[in-house]
Length: 438
Ligand code: XLS
Ligand code: NI
Ligand code: NI
Image 1 (cartoon, rainbow, N blue to C red):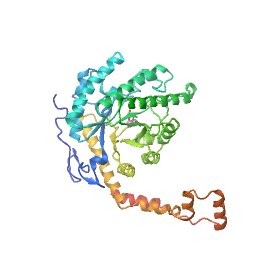
Image 2: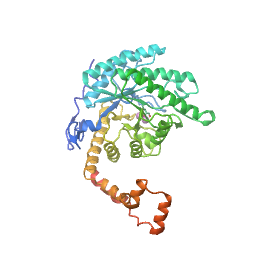
Image 3: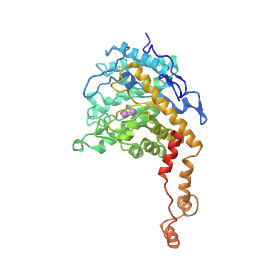
């Protein structure tokens, strides 16, 4: 097959001064930062659905993307050619991981059996390309939201047959993920939610979602798939209320249904902001409850209230994300998956490179800044000192569980008033952060 991107050779690190738009200014894969290579810290992954299936279509118009390797047909040959083009892209970009949905890879057939055969034919090419390049599958997933059969949801549908079909589809998706040596498998509940409670038995739907995940866990163990399972929080879109609305809601769900330890979270920036949270809030929550898994690296638009899935370019964001990832002890076996697409107006193949190079450089800068902040304890010392009252005296007794309300009443009756409060120094800390980002 002719090259899909003939004008691009390997993207290389040229350093901050370069004027070459197709070079890294900051991402230098073998450079060691805080004891680990940048490649190992960042574990970049390309999302096949956006980068190789995104058409640029929106509610107001048809697609705009020019993709010379794609003849626009639903043929298996076209699907296989697309996979080869994708691996050429991954290689030239220099990423080590990719992700896909079953239906991005191969077209649906007339029957489930034919659909499964189509998938196998394309997975065979992906397997060949993985072996040729050494690029690994970060996670696979199933598309349980596009086909009209899932209009009421998949595992949370009112129609039991939809649950059964989804189970068959996920079974196959886990099998091919296993076949490709995937490091994980993601459940994003595309339509697992509702649009009105007037027609919804919410408790029953939640029970069904849990049942579905338990079946998936059982099946995974049965076939010896050891990859990490993830659920991906998102509060809305396409439904009005999605059940996995944010990290905290996911923790409550996993706990109630006995799934803690089986699933971790794949956190996405734009989903955090849709939920009214910062990405760092979602990361802190997941880390605290022991369910941090992987990241869908993207960004929303402050002016637009939907999942615009843009490439991350904001250094404050990448710094804050990398601070938490380093705090969590790293990403592996997760990664930074660019669940992001180029704008409708950026329709040429080369724009795919600009987008990913920019996202990778933004994260490389975030990593270097976060590493320096940590090394200098520029924020950590302040936080430790802020909580100093808990290290000795009454604070230490409370933390150790040595006192109750009666002892605390006696303590306060004797002391009369609390020790003076100290300033939170937010503005000073913002200035320190700016110093490191500059
Ligand atoms: C959609 C989700 C989706 C998942 C994979 O908003 O982010 O892309 O990551 O199904
Ligand atoms: Ni995502
Ligand atoms: Ni998303």
